[in-house]
Length: 164
Image (tube, rainbow, N blue to C red; front, side, top):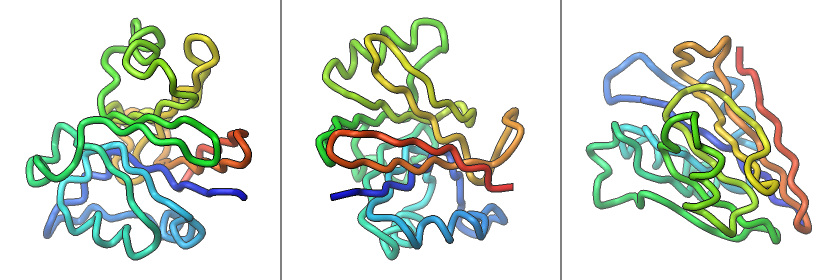
């Protein structure tokens, strides 16, 4: 079996604000078996909207004040034989690989956000580090992005998707 996970982070969609997911993100959400959000959702309404596409797994971000007590700080789950972990803030770039291995010693893939900078890299001992960037607020990143994880029989395929 294959599971397709659309991975978001740092969407910062606020009630009454102008920030929204781009149309291309909605096209990809239509194809999702699951959605993982690595924090800074901001309002619960976005989680409700995402749940209309597929089951949602989300962690608490530093701007998720309304979701305190409703979302965990960290998640660890096995999907299609792949050990996934997710946290919002992985800390500073310096020492990240070692820190993620220490925090999630058994994870094959660690998903995080906070910086808005997309990253798909190999960490310590082959652990994959994935930051999907932000679909709505690119900051210093060249484009708006999200990630699509395709998992099958222990295999992992990652696509960082440019939404612009």
